[in-house]
Image 1 (tube, each protein chain N blue to C red):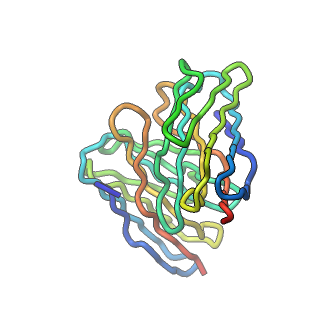
Image 2 (cartoon, chains in turn brown, blue):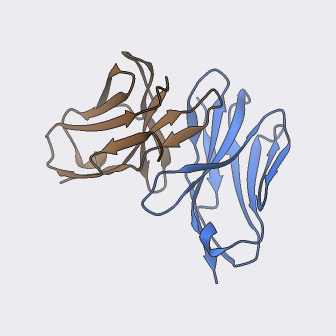
Length: 112
Length: 112
């Protein structure tokens, strides 16, 4: 999608290892979000950011941390990956003031 | 916090027929209700949204209706086409909260 990229697109990691997912935007939007998508649960908010160094928890934040040291980058870290964190992770930015989100293409993470 | 329930989880319709997906929300303070379409391997994309001061909104073959009293809103797709096959998510946002809560998703299949 225009202005937002996620990396990596796919990752397989072992239980207990740390993992960092990156979200990069080119449009200088203030609000950025991390969601996870799982069958039967839809999209659930993990963490979000409302500015550099300003972050807050979502509904499924346990086991995840985030950092935003620059406006354009929002990092999601799994400190010690577990099999329950196998999921598709989406980053989103709020465009303008309308609550409309633009989503990235997602990162498929498999924890074995 | 806000909770959004979406039904049905799967929906199959014949090409040319209409499709309806329904969502209910729990928090009467919610005032923004978007619908997103997710095609295979991609991130969700906003297709239509409605605010609480409007009862209905149309955009070509898609429309959204909102009943604030009952706290439910629906997506209507008329004259369905094969390219309408996708997963659809509804969302709700509380004014000032700057974050969306999503429903569980509906997988819509259009049969030729």
